[in-house]
Image 1 (cartoon, rainbow, N blue to C red):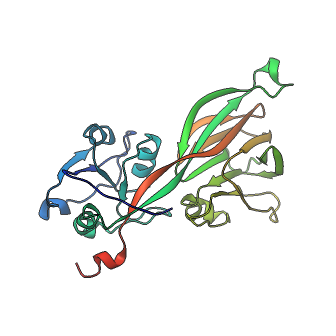
Image 2 (cartoon, rainbow, N blue to C red; image 1 turned 60 degrees about the horizontal axis):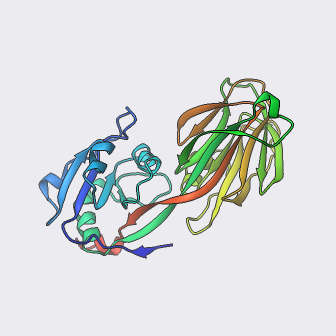
Length: 273
């Protein structure tokens, strides 16, 4: 749901130049140097450096940086710049104007769902029960994927929702996407495209053995993915990052547990600037 947002007094603008995971993000050019935002202090650098300054608003430059901010669990509103998958953003050359509009209280705060992702494994002695040992939690802003490592090595996957089995199928993998992520890789494999106003996730097989395999829109809680039969190593990938291996003795649970606030600057606010 959209809501009004105010920067308050003495705002701090934090510009994230890298995603904080050792990979360079697309650098944000320096339009602010030529046209600084009035009454705002600007801090730029890595995610850790910027967050340490306790910014009023964050500026990020691509999917990787935005996903890294979501993983950090911050509640600072983010103004995305440049092309971002499924999330409204501003052009780089309009950043000074967009920030001025936002700091004047004319931007809209919008919640982007975040998925809590857990890879659960069952010890040998507990395979006859439902007990699982949970690994560390991951957070996904865009998508969660199970994919067979070797090309043309098809495994069998299961999709379960609200304690019921939705389907099992043979495929190269399976992807779960948030409304934002449904506009990216998931759409390329035929997943339904979702509106941000819908509390749901999109699920689709990747390279299914049977071409008539269905795609689904499911509740954004109580989802589990399993490997029913593996004919090769299967990797869990969260927002493009490999985070673990999935076997027939494990499962991946996915639940919407929070949101990343982003700022939307209406076009009409920039039209005459």
